[in-house]
Length: 217
Ligand code: BG6
Ligand code: MG
Image (cartoon, rainbow, N blue to C red; front, side, top):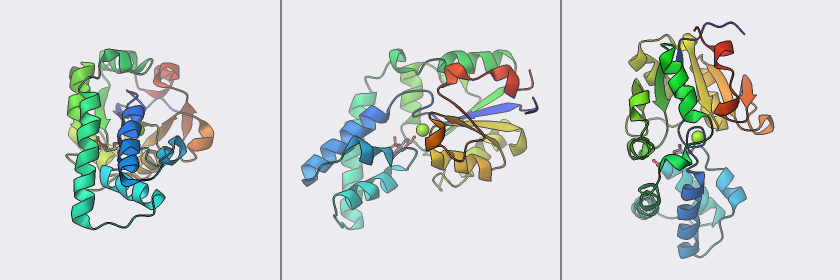
């Protein structure tokens, strides 16, 4: 691998912070209200997936067909519960090595963007006190097409003013890695290799990434 990358694009949930447990709590409670079980295994299917698509998967699990107005109301209900959890989020929930990784890249002059599907990203960044570490924030409020569409990362590269081919994406979801590849970027998987077939390289967490192997320092 050549050390030519000039920018890092980071997914949020599952890469920088462990919010999956709160998404799961809120989705599971919604499933219970609707009268069915939603297991942790079912929840794996929601990783990296947009809020509405997550609801559709949940309704598939419960074998329920609802109209658009009902779906919108349920997604709102789930989000209100999720937001009540992340309002309490603090720096202790930063994943190991995440902040150090962002800081080290900044010190070396590498541009950094967030590339997240979440519409709640601004609140999460604020509560983690890491907003100042990003040169650009692309989140669910800015993109029309969900991962695996590359829009979120292409917009990130554009806002940073760095060609796509010089960007590295850090992602814990297979859909996000596919998006990175389609965008022509290096796709770094965070997690277990067997879950991330589209990754160019996989690390168990940001703490394990050898930054000077990847970036043009
Ligand atoms: C992604 C999460 O980052 O954001 C998904 O991995 C979530 O689980 C998606 O559904 C949308 O998040 P939000 O906060 O806008 O509902
Ligand atoms: Mg993620």
